[in-house]
Amino acid sequence: MTLRSARWFGAADLAGFIHRASIHAEGISRSALAGRPVIGICNPWSELVNCNLHFRSLGEAVKRGVLLAGGLPLEFPTISLGENLMKPTTMLFRNLMSMDVEECIRAYPFDAVVLIGGCDKTVPAELMGAASADIPSIMITGGPSEAAWFRGRPLGAGTDLWHYADELRAGRMTAEEFGELEAAATPSVGHCNEMGTASTMTALAEALGMCLPATATIPAVGAARLRAAELTGERAVGLTREPIRPSDILTKEAFDNAITLLAAIGGGTNAVPHLLALAGRVGVPLTLDRFHEISRETPLLVNVRPSGERLVEDLHRAGGIPAVLKELESRLHLDALTITGRSLGDELEGAPEGSRDLVGTLEQPFGAEGGIAVVRGSLAPRGAILKRSVVSPSLMTHRGPAVVFEDVHDLAARIDDPQLDVTADSVLVLRNSGPKGGPGMPEWGQIPIPAKLLAQGVTDMVRISDARMSGTAYGTVVLHVAPESAANGPLRAVQDGDVISLDVDAQRLYLEVAPEEIQKRLDALGPIEPRYRRGYGALYLERVLQADEGCDFDFLRAVPGEQPDREPYGLLSGWVGGW
Image (cartoon, rainbow, N blue to C red; front, side, top):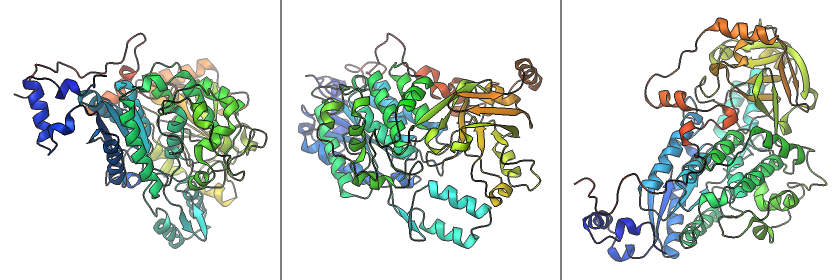
């Protein structure tokens, strides 16, 4: 088989000379190039992202595996996304990272690529870029961080923080105690250690078949994580001989498998736009309704926060994602191809039986339904979602008056005002927080309970927005309302006191205002001014799709009937670039 890299390094012309000389300048000999597959290692290491701080050592382990298998590893950087420090949100830059990854893969002489992913949007961004380039690719993820310990109890990275933040606002926790929590909260590298967005997406990468089995839940600080990286490097070399491309793996059946796992693990809501965007890159016609259909049929099988009590490292000891997939076997497409070259069914033949305090069965689950619920109606004509496994049963059906916050700044200024006209029956509404309005659809959707209600013992309310929320969050929170308010959706027309009705089982979300009145209000509000007028922000606002289509750029989606363009723009042999 002719290697793709041979088009750079194998030519007996001036272009081949320059390409080889560029590698020789790095101290790599010609014999190291001769006939060896070149494996790119995509590494978003950054000192700005504590979750990914161990990626240098992961990269070295991948290189070791590539060398052992007879390949030549060449590491390259990409932008790094970390939810905590990057403002206004990493979601604004997910598409940019995907473009960075795609163009690097296409433009450089790689025969296969290893994607190192971790914090939140890094995993979907890399998968999206690799899917569009469609060169053999495999992922190794960074693993969950160690548990923090506070007051004798192991903590999740986010779920427990939201609880203690409410305790502080309610006056049941002192500032000094909260300071102790801050000092203890992040004891190691690694991504969220409960089923937040990062842990969800790493699990889904495994269910999709894009990483080696049983690798998603290995703790970040464990030696097994490095061994898995080495094996991933070895497998990347094997991919050049078969070859297996992302388009071979990311099929309709693979997405069904991933959504089934999403429901069973009580995974984060952020997975919905990520899977929608990834499906769009490979031309799979995935819609919100498919998430609802599969979630209604799939029980909650995993006892991990925020839907349960334990952490991801506990799930790993209980058998990891293979143990969960094994319990779901009758609901999965077992003939789906994985990156190993074997089917999912073949890989599950030796999967362990999960520990029953962590992994339930279809007959004895932790919840009758897991995953995502989709609601529609006059307030969300194109849909909105909830994380069903964390919704309060008493609020599954609710009707109450709206308390509207114009944006996150208005929310911060008024949510704890003792004079705020709000009761436990109110419906909190936040707008101007979607893809265009945020911009970037920040994680502002878990609107805090007003302080005066917290003090009265209120722990949950119906909250509605066009924003996202952290995968570690919980509560009766309606998210991703589409079209968003900044796209002149009905959310823009809601006024204080308007009655809103929610019925999760009936998939209904209604603003009880006459349609003609909604339109009259929207017409009176006039045009919407864009938040950015230059640079990447302006491009983002012009081309981003709504949440129900994955918030990808319209021009990055697969074109029906067209094969992916796997080669760099312009000529190779005979062309002397830069001279």
